[in-house]
Image 1 (cartoon, rainbow, N blue to C red):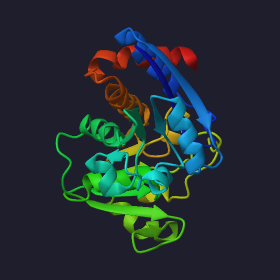
Image 2 (cartoon, rainbow, N blue to C red):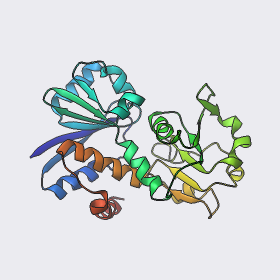
Image 3 (cartoon, one colour):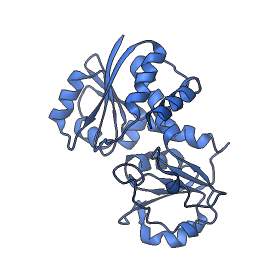
Image 4 (spheres, helix red, strand yellow):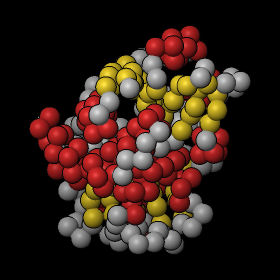
Length: 264
């Protein structure tokens, strides 16, 4: 079995996805080519060309919603319920002239927080950002928790950063779903009142491999976690979709993290 895979996004300066998926190919004993495809813009023609060349691909910022908006009305576009509900996808499988759309971020986010909490109910979430990942988190947890999104300009679905002083002491789980902390924004700072989050339980930064100073702004009592577990979990879920396999995350997680250490 040979698979031609890839990831589209911008700027895609750094991504562990090729390493992870090449390892998963080795794990199953199949030949995998996984390419980075940086695209400053996308349109239907560009997506059609990619679809003609690949067996499947991941979609990352800033195209998780835009891709659905571009091709979601095609007769051969078949989406799982998460994609239908959110109009957000991060995984495309191409088979029998059909375009299958999935959102495996739901597994990555859930798996990461489930490893910290036995049950996630009656928590107050604050999510920095209003993109696809932020909306996925809201979708997952809003029924049994209070979820607030923060964006640069307040709107009907979010508050502004200027309003954080009042709400910060009430927050249990703070999630950074902005690009800040990842290249090319690794030296930028979050515009939040760190000292006001005095009841915070978890700071979950969706970016991965960020410097320790970025995660150490809060007290030692706060559990700090980056997005590496989320990245690997959603990658395994994507790979299982492409290969019709059932790889268990626990069977590959350690080996993948060890391989990624060698890449740093």
